[in-house]
Every structure is written in C-alpha cells, then in structure tokens.
Length: 83
Image (cartoon, rainbow, N blue to C red):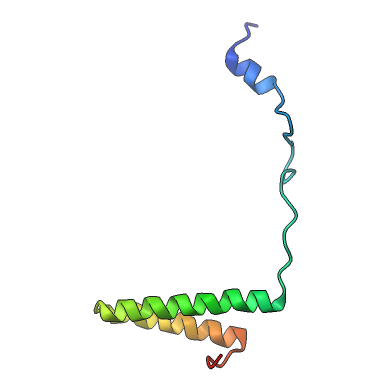
C-alpha cells in the first residue's frame, strides 16, 4: 500500500494530544449561588435594555416579549425586581 501524506498525518501523534471522548475537557469552575444570581440578573438587565431599544424603534411586540422574558426570569430567580 503506498504511503501518502494523508496516511502519515493520520498515523502520527501530536505532542500533548489526547484521545477519547471528553479527554481534553478541563475541570469546570464551580460558581457560587451569588455568582449565578449575578449572571441571571445580568440577563434580566440585557433583556430590559433591549426591550427599551425595541420600544424606541417602534417594535412594541418585540419589546413586550423581552419584558415578559425578564419578568419570568425574575420570578424563577425569586427576585421581586427591586434589587
């Protein structure tokens, strides 16, 4: 069987390479409850900001959808929205 550059490339190992499902996956950082809540609150703020921009651009339907999403996230977070 003739050797081609593709055959050689497939048969060579890469230094530091890994094999197998998820073998190169790094350990994940554990988030605290406060960090998670902060990320979720940022999502709420992003939706509220985008909703204002949509409303200013006369896209009330899109703005209303984003407001509903922000409210649903607040409920799921157990946040009354005052924080």
